[in-house]
Image (cartoon, rainbow, N blue to C red; front, side, top):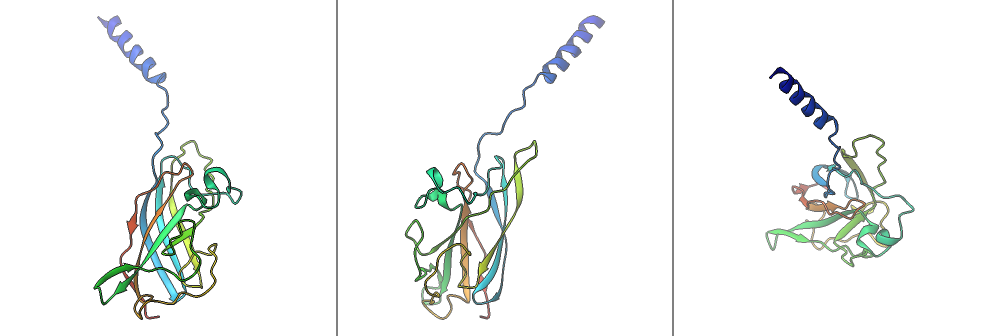
Amino acid sequence: MKKLFCFSVVLVLVFYACKKETTPAPAPPIITFGSFTTSDAYTGVFTFNFSDADGDIGLNPSDTSGPYATNTVGYYDFYMRYYCWSPHANKYITYYFPFGSNLLTDSAILTYRIPFVTNNTKNKGLNGQIIINFDGTGYKPPDQPITITPTPPNSDSLHHFRFEFWIYDRALHKSNVVTTPGFVTPY
């Protein structure tokens, strides 16, 4: 009986010692809102948190062909829709910027390329925070072309607004879509 027990313990130890490490199945990133601060009517800092089991966040500057080519969803990996408060409708409405449209021809969506994140650890999952500085031409990321400064549809639009945002990982898995709280600024 004692030999049978020892054999069972050894068999269990061998089974677990030979257990193969499993790679997590590809999954979309998960994001949460961090903060949004402004210093005037045209500059702001937007932060959000992310978790990605695959660890494939961000794009290299050279990622401009194939699934990352211009005029494809993969060219940008950060998308933000801008909503302004409409006192007439008593709700947030989509605001369409009067400057050039992005690849989706939707001038309500601001786009950005998150820089590639290198992960040299054994665990490929990534968790972190991304900070986007809006550059002073009306709440737009710095890599988006602009021809004119946005003109609000009514006086409240740049004073009372909110965002909806999402990201894609390198495998083009779309994250959850997050709606920020409303912001009211004195500008």
